[in-house]
Image 1 (tube, rainbow, N blue to C red):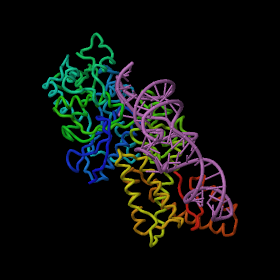
Image 2: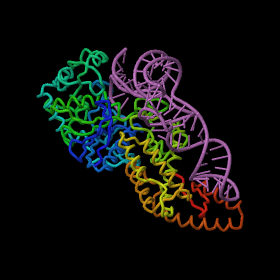
Image 3: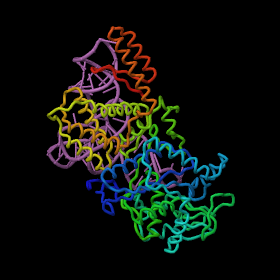
Image 4: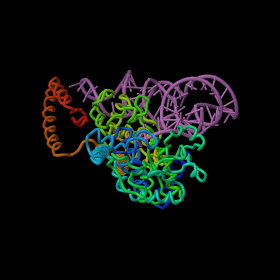
Length: 490
RNA sequence: GGUCCUGUAGCCGAGUGGCUAGGCACAGCUCUGCAAAAGCUGCAACAGCGGUUCGAAUCCGCUCGGGACCUCCA
């Protein structure tokens, strides 16, 4: 088991050596999407980042239980527990039942995740499936003295909690500063303190999504679901909790408070936060209206895009930036990634053609170590990719006969590329071996044979026309020393 | 206002106090009927000003610029 992994912990704002609570086993919880709308690309970035983390932990040999929830209830619009329920509002707009909204966008979310080649989590619990657990937790928090009920709504008492625990620790803030920067309570506000938040919310008469509780009909507050579900599946204290940076200040801060108040334990050892995706320097968000939908990106059907980019190119593009840095979207950057990605994949294919030598001109173990070092340094994918390009250079050089590789070198390089490109980075070759492709392969062999004959007669006008015409149909022909090869452009 | 992050060559992006990632683009050469691919070579950067140091893009301070969170958002 590799024990050199460093993880940046938001709690301490430093990189820490990763030591799981139970040897060899990792509990990982990631805040999933609220399924009242299409996932936009910013959401996807977080889930793709944690997919990488999940994959690498498994690559290191850990047994990982990866829990990522679906929020399908209790998420209000507007601020401070007073807005409309997101699902009910969307249901009215689309003239559907709230649970039809949930179903529709859950399915859409899964489709997109599949396109990005993310592994499904071990458990994907929903808020509505864990109402009992949430109610029990709220009861316990009240019993422990950190929450109070007013007219069927239960609030968490932040100021009382802060007397014993540092409420603002995750964002390094003092309670006084937080209070100062929060707006005044309005006249009819039921809360005792400005920072108090709802654990359970009394239902409005017109609302459909409602459950019985000791405090009457209502629904759970947004933050309690993650506390309830993470402790149920991973225990009262578990290893890693992740999510987007935007959840840090409110959602995760409240999660810590709830779990601590309920279980008398800090819930999480390592907090990990992914940075935001930006478009022209501005954060991509639902409210800013600058969100790309994944489908728009794949097809290029968006005013800001010059063309479409395949899911694997987008994934590769994201991996070229570290997860804690902002990632800015632009055509130039995407095109650069597209070409680089193609080069990397081509090198992997080339590996099959290299003839082994009896002597070796490389030190493979050094490259393997460099790959692991990069990933062990808080999942530094840009450095890993730089190293993989070094490997690609070796492969290309060997293919040109300028670097010697033994049979063992070739096997080792294949394993290196397979492990890191496919297993860890989660990329996959874009060409699939369907029946159609097999038919196409036969056709292309015939065409290339004909073209070879034309070229032998030095009728270059005809052979070039054939190449150009195939190019217009996204099939590119390249003449190499060993004859012509063809590839389908994505 | 509070808490932070950030400013790296044409573009995207890593980075350790000393040994100048990587990708894309660009230029030259090799290969080639041409093109492409591939290889080799070249190219250029650390926002500004001070300080610490034998030495700083890397540490500290200030100035200027960009961004996030503090109200729903991954």
